Structures are given as C-alpha cells and as structure tokens.
Length: 176
Image (cartoon, rainbow, N blue to C red; front, side, top):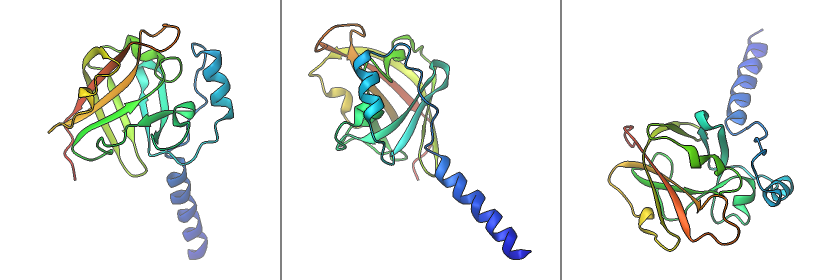
C-alpha cells in the first residue's frame, strides 16, 4: 500500500511539474495569415516562462531570443535584460500580428503574470508609450521590478514598422 501511495504522489508531482508550460491553442482570429502558417510549423522546445494577460486573452510561451524563430511559436525574452525573478527590467518582444496583437487595447492597471517552472510573478501595467524603432532606452536596466513588453507599431501597418509600442509594468515582489 505504501508503494502504491508513493507512485500516486510521484505521478501528481510529475504531472504538476510537466504542466506548468502547457497552454491552450491560441485564438488566432486576428492573426495575419503569415503568422498562422509559421506558428503551425513551429516545433516548441521547453520555454523559459509563460506570459499571461487574462483580461486580453493573451497567453504565450517565452523563449530566449537566441532560439531561431522564437517569435514564430511565442514571444521572446530579450537577451541582456533581467530573467524572471531577478531585480531589474525584463523585456519581452512579440509580433504585432500574432500573440501581441491585443496589446493595442491594454489599459493601465492590467495584470500581467510571468510563470516559470517554480514561481509566478505578477505585474501591473503602469505606462504605455510609442518610441522610434531604433530607441533601445526601453531595455535599460532598472532598480525596480519591471516588465517591458515590446511590439511593432502601428499595429496594422504593412511592412517594416517605424515605431515600437511599449507596455511597461511594475511589481512589488522582492527578488530572492
């Protein structure tokens, strides 16, 4: 009986561990045809995290930007910015015609979560701005817990977008 209970407990732990990154199929109703096609072909490795904005229906895997085609299967953690749980500015970039399409309507105060294998970090949108595509100041490190979401702007522009839409969110959690 004790062995059976051990395997039941082990099964629960293994299932909980494996499920932290499992997502429902994304709503692609407002995605471009190109993004739908490249998403369908993407073979997903283990993500670093999952970003979720429940109120907008956004849920996406966060892959390192060193992963070729990371933006085809989710969004991308910008190299050189803080990792989840580290004090500073964590920047995540995503395409305006797929996962980050709905950022266009994000209000101040909206909750954003970053979930990793062992922790959930919560942020609130504090600022929205539009900057030139070459302006990298939004990636600068901070002394606060900050999440910066980046996508191209204007949202329905055809071709290389001249600007970037920036969603800045802050948190009160303390770094370990």
